[in-house]
Length: 149
Image (tube, rainbow, N blue to C red; front, side):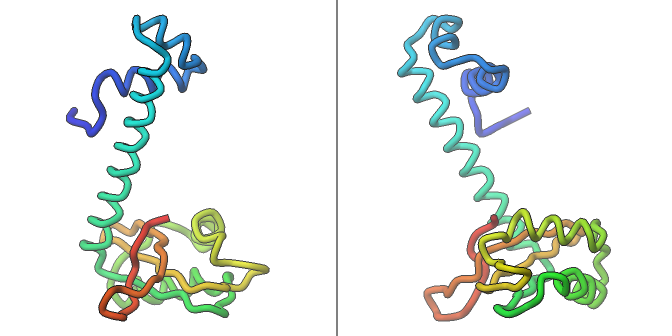
């Protein structure tokens, strides 16, 4: 399978996941710790670029975007999402409880004491998946989602 990661990057990440230090990996691969450090750093950068690319793509193909306004009670967010998905005839893959957990995990910086303190965007994909995005002003002074969390 094609990947944004090289075989060496994949091997280094696998060894790190198994608990090996960069020094140990350097010894295994016959190179320096500094080289392993750079390989790992570039692998993580490639992963972040891939995530950003998917975020942009999902934003492009998303049939439905919902702005969650400041002052919204977090407990009302599932109802807002289900209402919009019903209008768009999209089956959301999550229960209300799962949406609450998702929002709490992915939008926690926008929420304080059950209330939304900074607006954000929920994107609903055609396949029923949801994503949370920042809500920022574009260069044309129009509000639009910019970044997946």
